[in-house]
Image 1 (cartoon, rainbow, N blue to C red):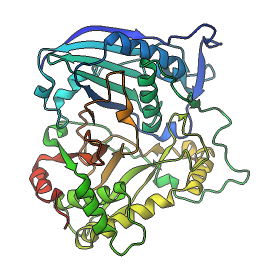
Image 2 (image 1 turned 30 degrees about the vertical axis):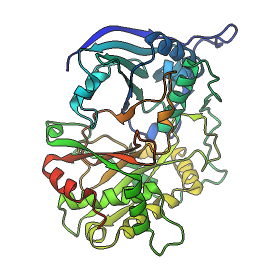
Image 3 (image 1 turned 135 degrees about the horizontal axis):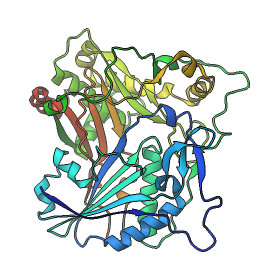
Length: 434
């Protein structure tokens, strides 16, 4: 697939009369949650069927929404006193226009492949902008919107709020409540700090000189991303099986994740004595009494774990219960314990590093990004909801993405990166309820 770039520009916030900020440059200090999240680009793809929205209308809406979400028009850096911050300087978001002499179906949108990277601005290049966008128009009249944002600036919850507001601005509708930014008085320790959990070995770890962090070598060449689509009926059957004899059924998320955890473990052919754990994010907004409009990161993680033998030999209910119990432990008291620890200076004094790092592979573990509750399909530029939505190509073995399918009937798409050697075994048991 040959992508022809037509233009690249910075779209700056468009303020209405009297709304320009004073002072022109402001600084939002990174919060303790921003500092422990992944240093990565969050990249997603939207596709809109013809008649697709015009570039002019999308760009106008973008300029309007950036006036409300200034962090996405700013840069990461430091305040004058050296505090790591998001700099609200209205640099703008990078907007690239491109065309492809092919139909959208030609790029096989059913699953992420390296070809999808062409629908984004070059993610390997150095970019000063927080948000990168590429509008790629296809011969068939379809439009692909490649959206990339820096995860340190905003988590999935905050980003989905921005995307919905962008669509509303493009349609000339009120954007909704404005984002609420971090400030120095947020996330204060208790008057008598109590660190009640082992944050040194959860949100942080002690690095060693032999650690291998990041992406190295040709590991990605041996990874394939498989898309599993679970119908509403299949999910209902799984939930009934997992929840049998339980008063309150497990959630859709708990059930699907438990099923995929067992399926991946079986496909990996691990020994029964090995331990497998999941890293899954838990939103702290309501747990800390913060508004849904809080913009930034407010996520910690639960770490369900089990031996391989228990995962495979015990029923689905076991895996679902382990997930449920671990998420329940990451409650408001857990978040406050983290606040007390992270603001104590112990992590810096002891040389601890954030445990949220990108890897080539997670085996025997699993990491999951669930987008099941985010309103990503509500991005409407005036021609209707997207025909599909999916993560971009991210070949990290064991890093699952869960998203609502484009059918809108409660079915779920699971994007599962696997080693090529494990793919066939995964396919053979993916739709089994055993």
